[in-house]
Image (cartoon, rainbow, N blue to C red):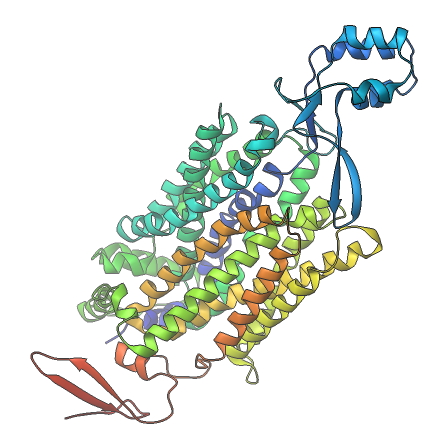
Length: 580
């Protein structure tokens, strides 16, 4: 009996003209995903701020118009805002206080100007009070940010990082809700629903009146935009034959990286966060047209019993690919067989991943690796503005290194020397060592370029491992648990992206901590990968029993509970069973 994959391999073509067109068109939806997910780099960017001083205009007028000094603006700042000592990585600096001001009035300074020539004497005798009239912001780099709009400074400073974590939390919910939608309603309907949600909540967020509403809209937007990527990725890969899925699965994230780089260019010319968001979100309305000319996944249609629709799409695909189909190709046997293959995956649950020792070990190691990759990937991505140098150029380079990183992964995984396991282990170790070295380079002085280079090396290794772990993990899980296993790892991985902004916030006090954490966790992940078996060129596990024995060289016994007794199965390397 033929499977759906057999039809692609033998008759339709695994990656012909039809699939290439659909793949590229769907890949375009990943570009705004990269734009929106990396947007917090500029949306929550830190800027200098200081207290608004009552009657500031009157004080400035006295010193500027009355010509007390030629450099009146700087003098007025010194006379109204105290300076604070900052012991940073680049040495001791003095900056205007963000949270306090001198309690002065225009009459105080007018009296001083006539009677008291010593400025320091008057300043030392003036009370310092907290900001009670709002804040002014340095808009030379960013004309508008979320922290400026909602005054996320002083005792509200932590809300800036919290907003980033709330945004990433949306992806955690998206893993659960979006996956359910695309499984129940279809890949294409899931894509349209999540694109529509991204449009509505993305536009609404740009006009949010307060921080709470902004955060709620940010959460929902993140869940929707993750669904756009997930549904597009699944749909594109399900068009493709089995031998091409590894390559297409590694190439698809490159569209995301293009959005990553494009954000740096857009942000350079558009310095207001809400206008930048509208520019990114609004063009997504074009993707709604996909509903009328991008077909549903034939694999999903077959699993839902909609075989006639699947046959029509397959015939259209074969026609565009220049293939001819046998007249009797579509019969009940292959349809039934394909449906049973897909429905078998829904007979098992998450608990099966932890029921047996080998499967449990594999699952826990992969979860740790996934969490580590998200923590390091988003930690480095969101911290590029603190590396020194030009933040826009830093972000562009961080996006650009992803494309060769994914490309390297495609070739490395097929290497007969390294294989899947060796490739992932080396990229983990390379990224981890680069991050640890970065921890001891301050973002200033003549070595700024070296710090940026190390950060990009770390990003390269982590991104390459990120792409390969999806393929490797899918090969380690048995067929009935493949979707559940990869989905659960991806869900747990979001805890890493949620923690990344908080770790960066802690890095304000302990600058070496974030890169050290990224580096150490990556090195540990690389060592743990060595424990897992190699999958390149191996017969992949089709059952839970085979997965339990996968990678073991000696004969083992497997015990499992029967009905009122303990049954034992002896399994040799060829998966031949002896029960006794």
